[in-house]
Length: 286
Image 1: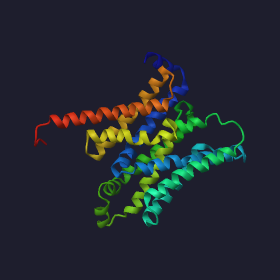
Image 2 (image 1 turned 90 degrees about the vertical axis):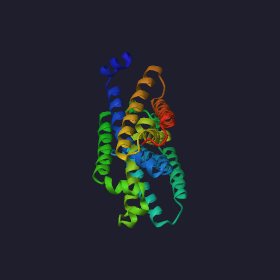
Image 3 (image 1 turned 120 degrees about the horizontal axis):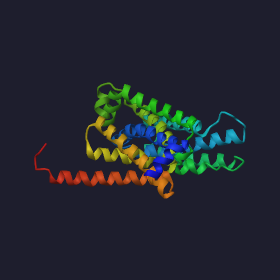
Image 4 (image 1 turned 45 degrees about the horizontal axis):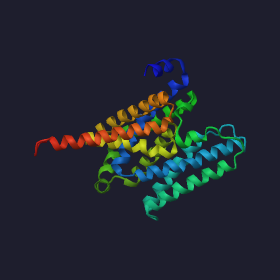
């Protein structure tokens, strides 16, 4: 830990990586709680893999077409939000089963990303960072983007927490009360897409779903109130991202993979601890 602390003081990129992990932990904990509550992990996974199409498109525009403003993060946001809106439209119209639409987005997004990258000239040294995560690549400009994305996500959830939570726990009752369930489901999907994009830098496209669900699932074993669940999930995600960064620095391992392992270990501890707690409680106790 001493080596990491001293390196943190002398290496700016390490400070950027730590800040990125802590910033994205906020959105991951908040939105991840909604993903777990709504049981929409498969939709989150589909959106996570679909954003590769946006990354590939941005690479192709920048390298093959000379578009100076094209950046993988921008492409991921546009495609991620577009896929979220498309999935929300399909679910609202019920033209297709939700799982069919998710599988289509998953496969087509990945395929489009591969095709765009295949048509892009040059060597793409940072591509694996988007697939498997490399938070050490985060620069000040990207960090500002991540802070902006997380601010939007948290602000929307805070301002509209009542309809979002109501449609998460009992959508049929909310519909009877006049709440536009399809609209709020679409908004939650957009929030998931924005959170997925921010997490790509921490754990990569392949492992985004783990950091989006494991901290929230661990929190769900420790509390039943949604506000407390979000707060605990944020803390767990922050511990996982920071622990993953520290351990990967000491052992020279991929940061994204270590972060996911730490999150999984915390989930297992919460699961086992919750089971032991309920087993030891007196029968009929509140």
